[in-house]
Image (cartoon, rainbow, N blue to C red; front, top):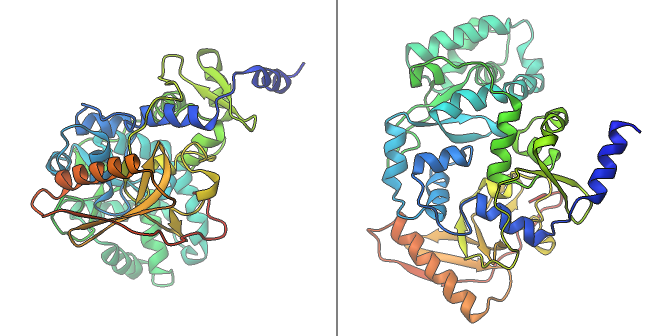
Length: 381
């Protein structure tokens, strides 16, 4: 019998976890089933970073997850270079701990290198090793904007596409956004330097894939191989899971997909209550699995985004149930369906709490509105 046959036979006999069981397990690990007393730094580490395509989402993400959180806590970590903003998972900006800025960027570097293929037409005749060396020298002399990189690199390779040159530098080098960019309530343009220069230490070798799998399962499991590949933006992780198989538990989802998990990870009773939560756009809870039905009901598939633009989302009973936005000092909540009186009261209470944390100086108002239909063909979320 082949190893593949053994795997299939084992998967067929594994216990089934339905969407609600997966929902509660994932919410628990995401610090969303109950608010955590972890520090902001420990939470960023546990969650393997926070989506940071915009400035505010990391702050909103921690406000939903941590007891006693105040935006200044994350902002202080950023000012002290204990966390930083860097392109890592899925070629998107994340706020990571200093350690993960170096380690996780090295882990996903193969995907960043492959990304260069999309720009090869604009890089004809460009020596990429020389480009990386020159780019490093430029940004470590002083932080540079992408416009400055385009201009300087374009002068060195006038026949190349300046945008392709700047993007290539970002792919080849672990570039972080320097402060004040990313700090709460402070404006600042995007200026870049290397993670090693900003953090004052060199990057080590890439972490063992097994260690990253364990961390991923601790924050997002139970999960399939494809789930983790979706989260990381990588391929070919099957062999790593197979090496870990003897130390992991296996389950199946309702479609028969094999799921892996850490033996001592929490898997709460599916009936465990899940309080409402307001999440930022691009929150990793909605992006870290190939199959998102553990959070996104089929009826609401695609409603949390429009094209490439994600919306701020509301969870009710642990599942995607609406959108939200701030209209001046008013929190506008757009449920997808009718909320019960108790749910409406809980959502309003959670909204008031969020406003007190993130905007304590403002007078707060909450308004419920009908949700627009934000569905786009091909959306996966």
